[in-house]
Image (cartoon, rainbow, N blue to C red; front, side, top):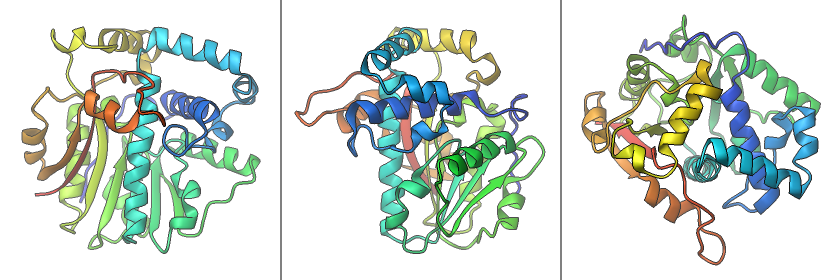
Length: 302
């Protein structure tokens, strides 16, 4: 197992997009404060102090969401849904007491802490670049939050180090069932690097290992007419050029693409299914539409 993730020149500083995702989760928690729509009560601890101050006030939060929506229509709703999807997959794995969960590009993921009481012996390994991980540790320390036993934050230089080699040093057991979480990462990688990451699961050594991931469909004349897609691609070029979208999969091609990587599709949700499953409030009313180019998926070795 020797895949390498090649990223652009972003290893020298904490990830801006990981911080933005934490902001969205913190806003959702302040607004909804429930397990379905706003479960991440730890997200605000990863925000700079001035961000934390401003999200306390409802009017400021409303203005923040409006500005985010203007640049990235539907992304706030998508991240709420994405969080719920990955939370469910993570909890289900803990309920089955699988031996290992590996987070690939963990960012400011807080599931190991949020669901510590549900963990009855599952090892959790978080991989990410050093600057992001160092900042995460500093934020946890300042918030007096201790990582649960059995949770490891392992730095990796995705440009130069093999995921397999780094995992092996971290105590990863190749022949054990493993859940790989790959949230909010795939689109920022070169196509070859994204493919090698998916192949990691087919090489993982256990037939029941699973990867949960999200991705973007390719820009096309049809997709650019859907909700928020054109604005999203344009805004990424303007606001996040260092972490712009690189990897996409053509609409309807996910199953065949994964087969070429030694995987079979277990579950797949398009934007409409994402909205129906994860964006309904307690009355059954949708809180909004997710940006239409995103998809959620589960896959296993074929």
